[in-house]
Image (spheres, rainbow, N blue to C red):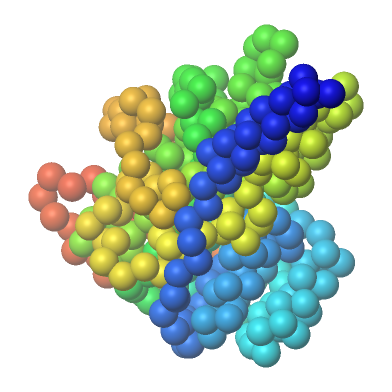
Length: 352
């Protein structure tokens, strides 16, 4: 009996330490009023995205839930409207696994919504498979789809500045390996799905870094965030043999979605972060990412390869549909600075 009690006590101590260590959720903070500001949250029908959208709506923002499933998206919008009393919450369909859908969403948004101040690139998957565009599923949903979406909406963000882009990355970026000449192809090896996810998260951090460089002087800032280890549906495609181990761990030790949304909300709303544009945040604090995520040459190569793959750089990809109301913005060109990011996207949108 004594050994059993001792063992139970040790297990309880281990559980407490692990739970405290992994669930270091930043405390909820007071948020500024956001009335008159418009936000898009991708993946806003559930998980961290829904929690982020709920808090933005509580602050008075007009919130667009951009998600693949219409029933889930409409239900989430109704739930948030009811809970917050904010009628300015709507659903718009967006499937990041389809570049055609990304373009259609951008076109519809630019026709229907005159303002955009916050773009929260939150949606993500960790699953094998190939998209209709021929890319690995995780890499397209987590990076390429968001890259194209950001480009297509950038002029609207600039016209409404000061504005922000928040890219939900992950500490998994530390295992990422990017080769611009094979970008978007499933990695080889038995852990291909996991590697693809890590690669996409490294791309997220590098995307924020390069985007910030190209946006200097525009009053549009961007941030990559690690939300923590959060119990969401992200790993619903985990192999069956692993679920009996993984799911209890997630339930016991991982953050809930409201806790996981805190760093995204911090970077979207906290005053005084402009000087940290392009940087990486975790636990609502500035942190240094893995060394490859600080490689400016790799960030530039990823950007140029991504442009080609989504059809903005004269490479692979179908022509962009015109949103018809896309507004031309004059941009000051500073000697020695790279071209503004909107130049190619805007030209493509005005092509028809």
